[in-house]
Image (cartoon, rainbow, N blue to C red):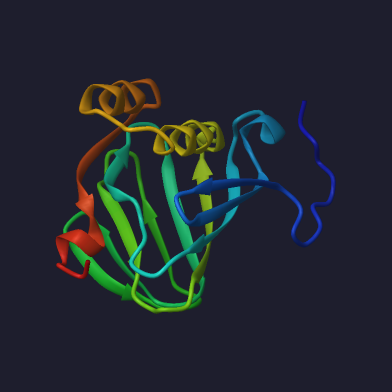
Length: 156
C-alpha cells in the first residue's frame, strides 16, 4: 500500500552499491511501482557500466559535484542543477570527475528499480560470472552494453 506521508531529511532505505549509497526516499513498494525517488552519493570515478532499461525512464539531477555522462552518443560534463534523462532503450552511464563525492537525485519511472538495486548490491558481494549477470539483467529488463565510463575514458 502506498505511503503518501512526508519523508523527512535523511529518511529512507539505504542500499550500498559498491562504495556508493542509494538512499531510497520513495521506492516501488511505496508508490505501487509508479516511480522510485533516490538520493545517490557517487564516489570519485565510480558509476555504473553503460546500460539501458527496456521499460524505465532514468532521470538524474546533479545536486553537487561534476559528472561526465553518456546518454546515447552524447558525452557531456554535468554540473549542479543540470539534468539528464534516458528513455527506455537509450544506453547511458556516468562517472564522478571530482575527488569529493557527487550527489544526485535519481528518479525511475515506472518504479521498482529499488528492488533491482538491492539484488545487484547483493550480487556485488560475490564473484559474478557472465551467465549470472546476464540472468540478472534479463529478469530486471535491462542490458549491460559497455564498460563504466571511467574505464571507457581511460581514467582508471
